Image 1 (tube, one colour):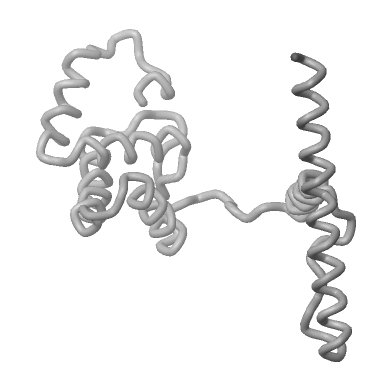
Image 2 (cartoon, rainbow, N blue to C red):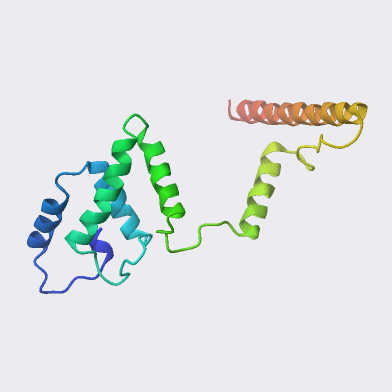
Amino acid sequence: MLNCFPQSHKTNFDAMMHGYRMACDAYQPGAVIETARQFMKGRIEGQSRDFAPTPAAFADEVCRVNELYNGLERKSVEEQRTRYLKSLVKTNRISHQTEKSSESKARVAAMVEKVHGMGSGVPNLKTGSIEERKAKAEKYNQERADAKDRWARKLVERQQGRG
């Protein structure tokens, strides 16, 4: 984390690391690592983007994260991290916008359509009569089956071309 912030040529790196170790030695390593990640990304509200946090400020945030980790001991590490990030959003501790742009959403939708090989996507089955809904669903299922068949044929052709 400290390499992400400028250091003075007079900084005693060993003494500084000793301060961080002393401030954080009672906490879980996962909490320390997650806090360092959030500081490096600039997601902690009120943090200086020009200087590394003091050991005391860092330890305060590690303590908060450690409490979240202790409450989630039975969850996997990834679930803990996700929950912690959500808590940052809920408490407005993340200082930048996390929503995806409409351009990004359109790109993702285009990729999904390309992967599935379907032009129209999933039909709206909430409108129309029961017969129309059944027809839409059958057409959709047939298109999916055809797309899977095309994919399987391409895969076989590629394997035969290599073999």
